[in-house]
Length: 456
View 1: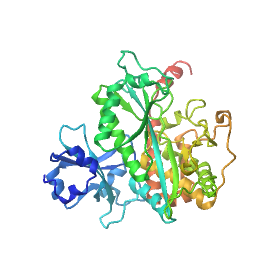
View 2: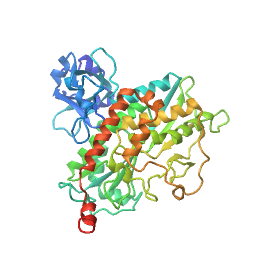
View 3: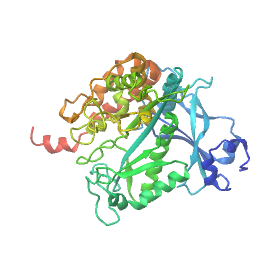
View 4: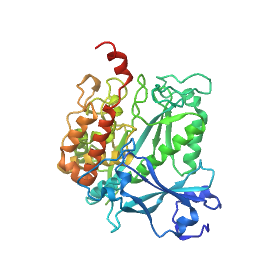
């Protein structure tokens, strides 16, 4: 391929540095489905350069995590599988450094054939919320934290997941948070993560050992919500590839092992006034502003109504356990990690709100959209939070829904959230999650066989 082609000129500088004069062999045209899984088409670069348009069927958004399809009577064209139009966003293009060929992957926006954005597309849901901020002259800023486990390869789903074997030949152990030697146990995987991230133009802020056996946390730099969601989308894939290269698995399940803490995707959030670049959470006296308290109030009041987007699977609710590194309520506090909503220590100009409820099994586009939607409604309606908690929030009652079905009831009951996220999307999301819950109830667990088979 001629690297002077116009589409090549639109690619980020990081990709051109990685390319280093080579020709692109293949292009992956990708989008995120409802689960956050990468779907799309791969093709030779020469075909991509000649293509007038690319298409995917509507059905990709109707699949559950098991691969089954929901049937929505309110969507009469669902089974015609009409084509949706894919438009490349070259600012969201990056290398595929683990591929044997020189490969580019490009996130695409999805629209109907008349040019209307597809409301079911998670990336469009996030753009819809960001645009609602822009209409008020505001720009949200986010910084996600990614927690995940490295595990031994788990070939048989009936067997429990186990921590990996490190360079010492010993299996990973828990409760070693921030241990440098624990991180070094998995040095080859970490090295590959760094190498892949550098090749893709991503900057890792920090990387640490978390509290679980083989549990790692990567913190990303703050920035535009859509760009950061794209990065999380890419990171999940590159982390999995780095793990597989080193004969282990990487899992983003919220609670993969019974005796280990769960994995979260904490989201740090602030809002910029686009007129002067100031932080809306900070007033002229360097004190928390009314917008700050409104955003907090929105998080506290409305997170239950969108929890099914932060905790999207039946497994997600196993994470919310008292004294287990995950919140059990929506209290807030300054520098208090026992609360669901934390205000980190920072300079006044960097004042922000950390949502600690979100699980790592979320779709990053949807979780960031939902969290920002709560804050936006809170600021618009001037909602006020409860008083800050100064002590241990685990001593207070559990007020987060305990299961997915209850979370879906709350999601269905809030028309204000539905209007902001989009009616078609909300209808589809509810249907998918209800079907996944029904599929789970058809499975008999080892606990049931152990305790009920001969005892009831």
